[in-house]
Length: 248
Image (cartoon, rainbow, N blue to C red; front, side, top):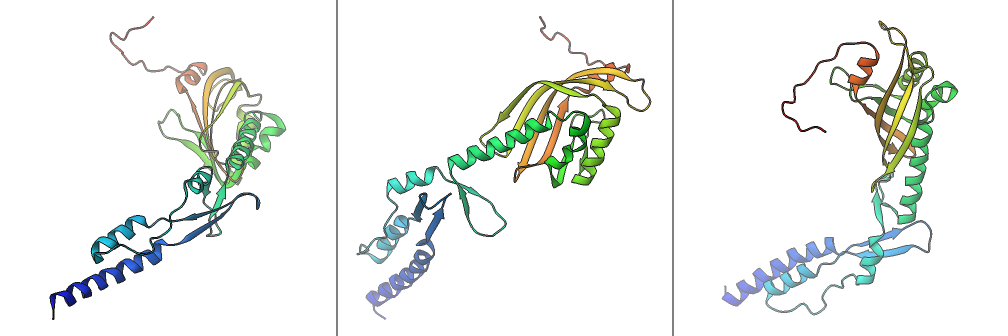
């Protein structure tokens, strides 16, 4: 076999291999956002593969693959991919994210205004079917939580019995870059009646983390200082020696 034939055969095989890759990479992704006025088409660029192909066969590709114009890239910048159960690709524009963020914020605000009474007994309705709600700073060092909407409903009943007039105040709610992640900070106070302790008035400062899904709370985590609650209940608390820590 002549050297030229070997080279041509090698180049042909490489070209065939790259051709298969180009078939994979030359795909059109059609994105429909909101309504028909927001339509963008993104074509995956294979310019790098074209150059590699040219180098291996020793001549330039006569018809290089078309690349996405910069204006198309800019049009894509405002789109965010969201996972769905349909198996397809769903996209959301900036306005859609803002709307979702505000809806989630409203749910969190409703949660923090349901400390007692009828609102408390219906608070579980703000959660997903498999939702989680509980305290992440317990005296055991491990989270104490209820999982599942039915168990959260029982948790609400328990709270109504042991924290009968609980109220949050000085509420601040923060939304984040992720519309489904919300944080809140507030003060809370009320009479508490826990087994083995006399009823007392209790006040503490709280931070809450909310993870949302489809407009409902998937996981709510409460963070507070358990030492403050222990002291309110008349319990002795340990002391950690800090040495020469600079204090005012």
